Length: 307
Image 1 (spheres, rainbow, N blue to C red):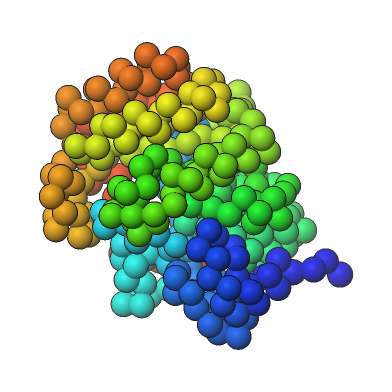
Image 2 (image 1 turned 45 degrees about the horizontal axis):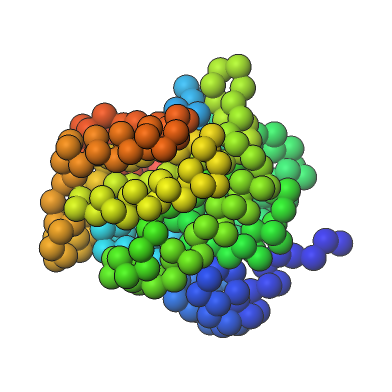
């Protein structure tokens, strides 16, 4: 019998926080989640990058809780205020069943959103789902604040890496996300993901089957941070695929923070996309600077889970 990944939660080191709590005994660390997988939403999503959403949608599974505290989080209702809403507790079999349901509904992939603090619960479910016949790729859609050791532990279970690259400024990361070592952690994380799966690969329909796609959200007034983030990507691999996101809006507590209490301007976004091209990052996805509401997830669905 294979060892369960969740056995590692007895002394939790699944993310850079390294809380060391016994989640198997019901203890919780920074993320606020014990050993049970807490799922806030599972359904087809069409708002990801084209290689992820394709034409039939990405089978997203949103985990509750988070190992960051982003003051501008668009998912704050499930990442930071999950105790106030409705989420479903799922064991490995329940998660595997949701994955198979999404595949039956036509999903191009299974897209785990915010998995860093539930990486081992996710891994057990993936292994079970594949044993039950899951045949579509698995996407690891994280904030980039991951443990390289944990990523290595789940080797072979993830096909597509979809991490954020939020900061290359630890002071900014501490102020906005309570992660004062983010800029120290994320280069190793991206390097590990690139080494595991390589550049993004797509099928004949342009849908991703394997590889790395990095997201960077441009923050208003923080042009130097964005330039540093793109510098890192160009140093890792100029052919890396990057999604330069324009969708920032002052969600959650952002209005309390001068500088990011406003939308991004077209001039700011153009400055960063032009910088990316100057670096030779030609595999870049560019967004139209339209209403950011288009990209906000809807967690008010009457049927967030399958029957």
